[in-house]
Structure formats: C-alpha cells, structure tokens
Image (cartoon, rainbow, N blue to C red):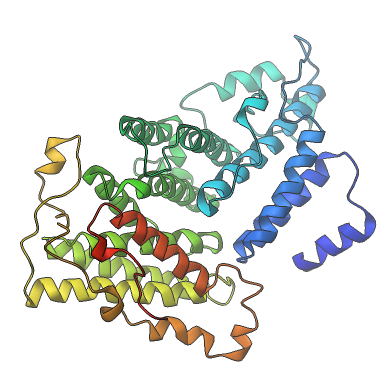
Length: 424
C-alpha cells in the first residue's frame, strides 16, 4: 500500500481515539511530509502528534510500583520511547525551520527510556536485568540507541533556544562555547559501535543499517553545531571557523539528508565569499564539497523532491566559491584586515581565515553568481506546477540564503546591506 493513501484511510476510519498508535501515526506522517519537502503540512502533523501525546500524559512521569511486572515495565518503556520521538521531532523542526516549539520543556518530567531492546516475549527479560544492561557504558547497541542519542541532542536544542544562543544578539558568547562542547561530549555516551570516528566496525557487515545510523548521528551533531554557530559568524571568528568545518561534513546520499546538505552548502559558500580565505586549498576544498553534494543529491533526485532545487542552489554556491578561488589565484586580492572578536588567541593567529574590513572590500555577489541556472527550474511547466507541493523549493532556499547573508554581514559597512543577489 502506498504511504500517501494511509492518512486518507485513517481519516476515513477515524483517528480520534486516545491511543499511542494515533500518536505514532501522526509522527510517521510528519516525517514523510518533511522528507518530501512539505514543511508546513509536516509541522501541522507533528502538532497533532504532540497534542495527542500530551492528552495521554506521555510527557509526565508515571509512578510505577517498586517491583513492576515485566509487562508493566516494558509498556512504560514503550510510552517513553514514543514521547522521546515526539520531543526529538519538535526540537529539530524548531531549530531547522525556525518554527516555535510546540512543547514547553518546563511542563515535562517524563524520564527517558533505557537503551535496551524490548523483547518479543515480555516475560523473558526481567526489568532489573534490562536496567543493569542499559547502564553499562560498553554495552552492545540496541535498536533504539541512535534515537536515544538524538533525544539527548534534542535536550541541547532546547538549551540553545532557552538561552537565546540561536540569536545573533547574544551577549555572553561563552554560552555558545559551552553548548558546543556539551554537544560534542554526547558522542562519548554512545555504544562503541555507533561512535563516529572511533567506532567498533565489527558489526557493520552483519547489520548494514549500522553505518547509516552512525552517519545519521554524525550529521545530526554537525547540523546542530552549524545551527548553533551560524548566527554568530559575523561577530566571532571562532564561530566562523566552527560553522565552516561543520559544513564540510554534510554530504551523504540517503533520503532524509537532502535538507542538511543544502543548508550546509549555503552557509559554507556564504562564509567563504563574505570572509575570503588566504589559503586557496580551503577554497578548493569548498568547491570539492559542493561537487560532492551535487553528486550525492543527484543519486536521490528521483526519490526526493528536495534534491532538484537543491542541486540548482548548490550549483550557484559552487560558482560563488569558484569565482573567489579564481580571484585569489589569478587576480588582485586585497590585503584584508581582521574584523570580529575572538576568545581564543590560537584561533586568531591561525591564519586560515581572513575577515572582511568594511571599507576595503565588497564582494560583488549579484554580478558573479550564475543565477540563470537557479531560475531555470521554473522553465519546466510541469515542475512549476509542483512548487505548491514542495515548499522547500528554489524560492525557499533563495530566501534562506539571503537570511544567511544578512546574518553574516550585519556588522559590516552599509554598502553590503540589501539584496545579496540583485534583481531576480
């Protein structure tokens, strides 16, 4: 049965019962809509899931007996897992799409689920054994290990939003630094088989899903680091470098990763063009990252509606970096003086990035970039008729790119204000 018919069937049969299955249905629907580029519909489906979960009091801690039966224990674990997934999606949709959070963390005291698979025979694994297993730092992984990590990551998203660290007018930059290292420290809590960069690969051949989960964790961490530092790239050189390095780690071909690759490409090309780099190898690395992103999106273009407009946008990002590389390699390149605060002398003296002084150099964005390749997506009437279905289309990414540019240049001279792209 095709997935798109499931919501219609559920609507016809009724979806108003107070049951966890209704919560899961709306959550799956939100995930499918988001990955198909239908952001507003996904957010509304998520809202339905949140309200149904709260109606079931999944957000509140339940008091169990000191020695619960295996059935009661595992049923409680299932409730916690469903609420964890709802919380994960709410926090991630809020920081990626700029939507308000649907869940107030102050209203929630539900405990997280344990990292242990729920057995088919609930009587076969005693709760005390399961809890002991889950507390072992070197435990084997479970089917929920990745989601439990994403749950911890969602707590950091709430910390970012609550502290205002996602706003460029944050006064205390140490908040950003603290959150950065707290996010990275979460990787140490993973089972060895899922730790990116220092993993136990012995299970990869037996369970091909593990490398994908490992990459999804890696992408989730770097996406959050990118979102944390992006508002501060104009003011702090450290954030500029952190965001740039995070953006280099986003290109992997699976269905749900298209959004992150496009986002990272836009941020990377903006940083490298607004704050030109003295080291041409960094620009070369940026061009290679753009080519890799386009190639990976091309692999899923027929399955993912985000991929086609994403390729056009990333092609323009590639051209922007290429123009800066040619300018640095073959043309006059002004001697730029540093701008922006830093809290780390080693970063300031590293020499990898050079910032723009407002009175010396103004990048000519509207002239250098080939926007014909971007607007060509409107030339196909059939594709144009589908723009209402895919909200993450070319205009969405153009608006987002303009916002990234504005955040990156608000401290510079007024000559850089206005439309990054010129007439379109």
